[in-house]
Length: 394
Ligand SMILES: Nc1ncnc2c1ncn2[C@@H]1O[C@H](COP(=O)(O)OP(=O)(O)OP(=O)(O)O)[C@@H](O)[C@H]1O
Ligand SMILES: [Mg+2]
Image (cartoon, rainbow, N blue to C red; front, side, top):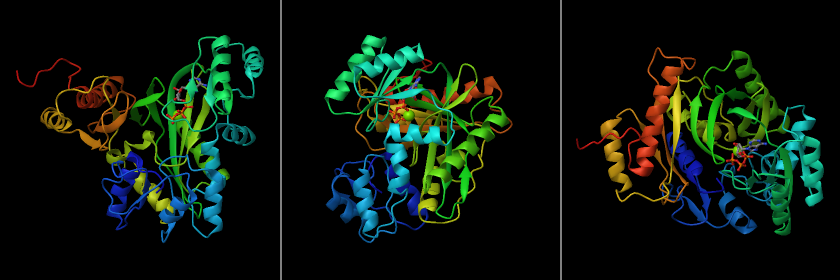
């Protein structure tokens, strides 16, 4: 796997159960995945020699991020390395303009957009949209980095000009009025077998995913099926091998639009580690290794995943002690920590809480209860603070 973040770390965890070892190409020995697998290649994802060293003798090369340059992947493939997803598929997750043009061509509904080559393009697009717009870096963004929500057209011109001056290609997009954000996660094997998990709701704050509700509460069967079918069709049309996450917007008018694509394990699928028969990490391995795919059925009526995001001020209490307290108070919490240093807003782990049997994702009180426990646990782990003021020493 190219990249050694938490996604590679958790993929290695799944690989162990399949009798496999995941080799990782990482920037350094402290990377989350390098801490846990014995097979570590230190190097850079944009250096061909390093990629070759990582690929040598491997069954298949896959990714924990989308930042490997397309040309290098094409070179590896030409040298006989199996790359999954292939460069021709992956480019649709790397380049937001290529992605949008292809989604348009395939008839998927997306927000209106335009490439921006200079500040005048921003004016022209803003006039056409006649509403707020978003400026996005075409490549290289993650966790909301590279996404700008300027207050007005002048602000949008400014951001675009700055990015362009730095050599970053830019696009403008209409700012959608959101009811909520959803995600459809599917897998596709080389033979074309597909598997879909239930469509989930992703809760975002400042461009970062903070929680996932699986399945999405009060989603009609019709929307669930339509979104899954769309994701499976896109996986097929784009020739994806491995996972495909389709990030979706549900507008205030109830329309579903595609926001973007990712071809790797995705934050919206972390709930599957405890909440589904097959986790997304195992499924990604099964797909790229050309095994039959695993069952995607949820094991509880609702699973809520809450990200542990580094607090503005890391607490004095050690993380280990926080974990100890958490287990004392919420024994059902399923904790996944990434071995990352705590920094403000950084994803350092996540917590899954499974809802009890007999509940329903259409019951707002049940959903609120499960969500509250997950968010309370995650907030405790990052802040050493109980959101309800509870004091364990009382
Ligand atoms: N056109 C839009 N209208 C409204 N909100 C938007 C729009 N585009 C992006 N956003 C908000 O910004 C968030 C991040 O945007 P996007 O998914 O494009 O960026 P990213 O940094 O590539 O994301 P990721 O964190 O998934 O890697 C979205 O989840 C959404 O909350
Ligand atoms: Mg996104």
